[in-house]
Image 1 (cartoon, helix red, strand yellow):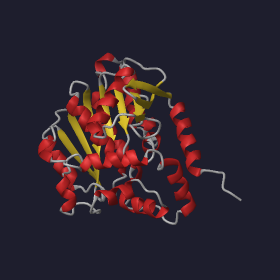
Image 2 (cartoon, one colour):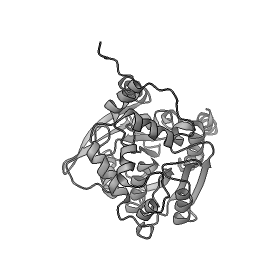
Image 3 (cartoon, rainbow, N blue to C red):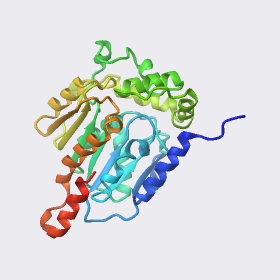
Length: 321
């Protein structure tokens, strides 16, 4: 008898429900030039709240990467959670694959929703896009969090053995797994303590739902990240920057976190989370959320505009687990 139930599709439905219950709605927007992008946006945007954009990395769609953290921020921010191009329901007919193009499209998407000032959190590949946004639109990005984002890598790093993989094809086969064995390898590289004994049919179901669409385009995104990349070509950003890294990251080693901190300079703070790998947002979700809240709380409106009772309640809500 053929299997009909999909655990992955069911979990995806659960995330959709949780995002809706958090006061968000999914909107698909045509931003022109053959580009369609989807984004979870607040049903009611409050002008008194600052804006927060949560940008996902490779892997499942944006809901899966921020589902554990959404509750911490919707009371304090207008939260936006976009799907980047070729993830979820976002795509383009344009040939560009560099993160600078993703950043420009994301900026147009935010403008279409009336967002012209924002704080931004970018995980892994989302950090590449977020960094590019901060460099291209410095007047728009207020504060930025870069989580395990190897923005400062260079093409020669692969040849010199910084990474676990030796070439782009091998990297793509792991980051875009098409077999249960490759997905297990990705889990081993992403987590310090990966789940063990997961049946192959669960992994195959995840691949079928999450990893088959736009596979070639995603390979091109990976290629565009590395090909010809030099640190000397990377512009510096000036916004206050929090860099979060898993101490045992095997996708983008911690050396890249220190390199990024040196490159950004005095406006950057690096937090290293112990016993965590590349998927630090999932493996150490509480620590990840704690550091985000500590950093981002300074971007909210001035306490002088609120009563002491309101201020006490807001801080209580913010720091309660």
